[in-house]
Length: 361
Image (cartoon, rainbow, N blue to C red; front, side):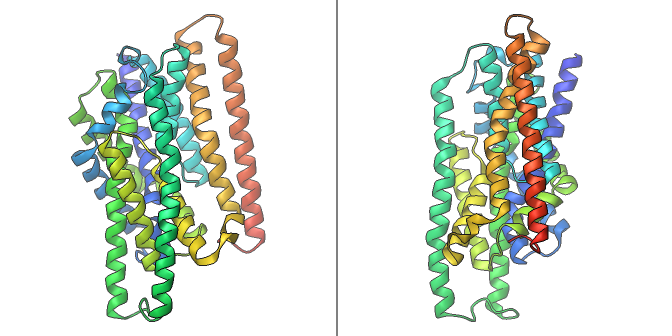
């Protein structure tokens, strides 16, 4: 019984951190462009939309997380606690640093760590998921890049299109906010499953109740923890116009909704950030890639799934098994700890460099 309570408590905390990270991914463009200037309002819109997305369309991804990566007989309460704890530690550390992070990567990494510990993984399903992880950011970048070029031509031909105070500009603000809400809806469809899927797999709750509870926790996380990540994604990556911001949110949201319909957990934050890079590159060229904040995000993308995998693999052998794998488990924890310490030092060094230069992008 104690393990069950621990699993539910960790899942709710994880869901809150998902809400914090998802805030930047879904409403960062609207906030960065000034369409929504009130940070609390931006997070509130995300909270409502994410809850609706989870309730109306989150079921397919829950099925994948609950039993589509490793055999369902491994999804016992004890291993679920380990999966959720490993993913939560990784995500919470990134949120404290104010860096966008893919909840799908840390969750899948944790599940794979358990599967490796028991030498049982659905490799074909995992390869499909990883393929989507590689394809979606690339499609997001080039799709947004093409749209960004089109927007640039429109701005050249109609220079007053987004002039402040005009009727057109007000409509474009509404368009951008609507696109941000649309992307937040997609975040709810895809990301809530990362927290409640393991609980469903262990039989602690059914899919419907899990989605409602997880969606509510994500909404709370948006409001309570999302401010710093929203600031990073909205202000430090690039300055977006109203049309550019709409392109970013529409691109990311559409790709994630399509993946959700197929039950694939995908990196929403990566899709959105790559879309931001795409429109920024279309406008300013590749000099955008030289900024320190981009290095931070790429480093977190690399470290997060590996760290959560190593931690979950280690936790299985430390807490659930006592065999010759103990040494490998301890080494995994040591490596994961060194990786996160190195990441934190890198980010602090990059932030100091950015501050010395008078700000980010």
